[in-house]
Image 1: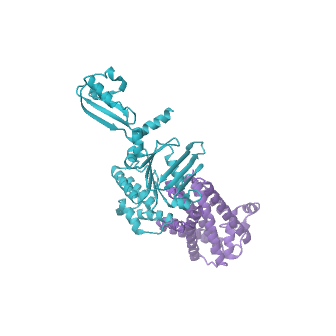
Image 2: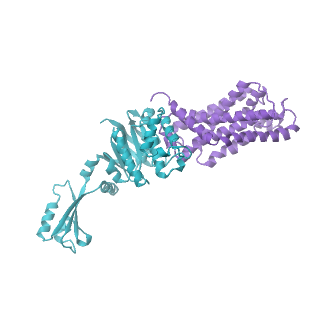
Image 3: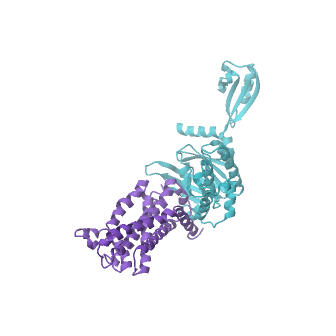
Length: 310
Length: 256
């Protein structure tokens, strides 16, 4: 796959002295879904805004589809569709007019068939003649997506696409993202809903305090950083953890009916078999075993915490 | 994409004219009614007691001033709102992220606002004809002057719209600066009617030169020489273009 976006040494300092980005390097491959994770104020939106042309970089370079975002801004921006985080729409315009306007703004000739397809895909076709102010919040969000797709972008930025969005729209959005990927559109979404990244993304980047802490294939990331939890359902409840089990650092759960043991799947010795053997030696019977992979959220939280501790 | 983004200019231009169309009735009726009121009050009631100014009947004398005054207001109001509203609602993000140059943006917004100002100016001209007989000495120059004034003041309004951070700021310059300057700029009188030192002081008001220049296109004479008027129009145009250029280069109040 070829790179569609390259970010090198990107920095942004505001007049107040606040450093929103501290030298970010990132390459986005064409056709992938990339999720940028990070807590509020981490620099996600700043980075997107710079790539799209809404914020001026302090240092570093960005190219989109081979065009520098400053010197080749026409080429770069033509390739991008942006759906910002806030609901920002006209009020008195009709839905179809505002979407056509966006297409014209990006220099594309009028194409009613394409606009119809976009509006139908977003369940907006029936509302095409409504004024935007008459629409619900979720519908306005769809209008913003339609505007971003109106000029057939190669890269779609979704900044917090599902913040404050109802379940139905969220499901539609995921479906749409999947369909867009089929057509080869590269999608970059920021979110602090981890399950979103987990569900959709091919790769995940974690940004915190203006620094990109890691970029990894989602599956690799989860494997690499993944911890598993072994839950042992006991035959008889225990009042306390026997001292003989101290070396495993287990916890007693469910009123003494379960013990939980967290282990690293990549450790040379996971300690699972020795723990089970010891349980047998102690005569503690169990009726069920269950292991669970930690989610991206756990990984994310532990990463951000490490950073804070450091 | 290569070359200028003409489709974007057209899209913005259409969008802005569409915005005007939504308020078409008031947009067209207001200039007709205000012009009529001015004629009833100044032309009829007061004008009949006034002598001719430079051999021009008073009612005819005020026509160029009336057109200029409305065009100043319309140009500033339309152009400043056109760019202020996207800033206010946040939809400016789309403009900033579109493959559109600063020049194209200005052409589109200023072009649309100037179009409306010219329409309003023409309506007033036609309405005035219903009340007085006006013979225009230099019709081509008149149209040219109207276009230059519309573009200059729309540029000025565009700058205001970018500068303003509240609706109050948006209104303060037109109401507290432009309006008094227009009234004192000879819209309804010749500055020769003023006593010294006011006549000399008035010459520091740039609006005097603009109104005088426009009056020249009607009657072949003005308070000041037409060359000075043209100099002031050109100066204002250049100044506004310079400021707009600087705003886009630095991203002033548009981009962080």
